[in-house]
Length: 457
Image (cartoon, rainbow, N blue to C red; front, side, top):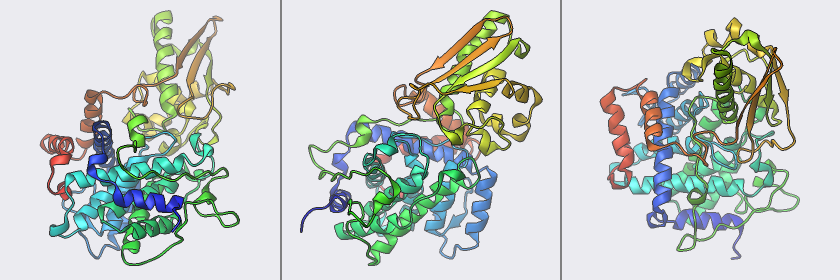
């Protein structure tokens, strides 16, 4: 039969082997796994996680899979994946790729739950687990490259709810050793379970996008394994009958090359961004710009004196859902250029405590927010590979101080050092586990390729 785009993806998922993972891909993906676990553990302390967990405990009849931050508690595999996915995105602290999506949270919880689900005789080893994780990343990345629309900050669908669901299906199909035909059907089924609107950004519903992506992709693979069929050309561009192209106004699918000597994983050439504080990725540019101009202001005035400031000018890209002048909740604050810039100016940092109710509603912060004016320069495009953040302080004296950030620390062009990544993980995980357990997880991820049973993770 003639090869289609969909069949090429199914062939790749079925045929790829651990030896196809380069040293760089293994290194980068293990950093993603460690960070995602830490973010998920931290997320297990949030109210939205508690709501999701209470719901899932009502329906877990076959409880075999672990839950972040709840030692000893088990849920049924797909609901454990859902709950842990919600935890991962509950604070918007998870990794971000280019084109824009949150790749790890959509894949890792499903793989962790699936590895615990399988009987002892078929437990995947650590290398198989790492391969399946990278299959999930690769499928997400390749699908994002089908559309130029996907390169910019999204307006319609939240990307992980679309490509993340497909990535979860691909990753779990690989871990469950599905046939090539079953892999194609898993992708087709997942496409019918994908999609969530951007309007739910900055609400408690947004973490559900990651929870559903990892859960529903997992369910798609389980259904395909049991014989359910779907459109075998779901990824192809069929005029008059949209498949995966329904999610994009511009769509140009390309076959995925067979794994081998000439296949280069996208993670090889496109590294990941890790967040230093729990907020939308775009906030990291304005925070670093604000910290820069704050230092200039302190050198100028001797201390940070808001009364000397007449106007704060933010030069940011056009993106409606992260342009929020006066956020009233923690989720809105995590998606507000204005809030994050002013918090950095006022406190000299942005961290976990910045998004508490008491911090959000401070009078001195509100007074700074009142001074903010937003500008959208034409050269500042809504694209995580091209945007910048600029913060200018117009003083009553007539002087103007400016800070600008083109690449924040943690961006793929300026990756976090191992020391910084471990510091973040230890900080997050220590909210849930004692130091000994935290260090054990670090060691296990570092040595993942040598682990005989990945369900130990």
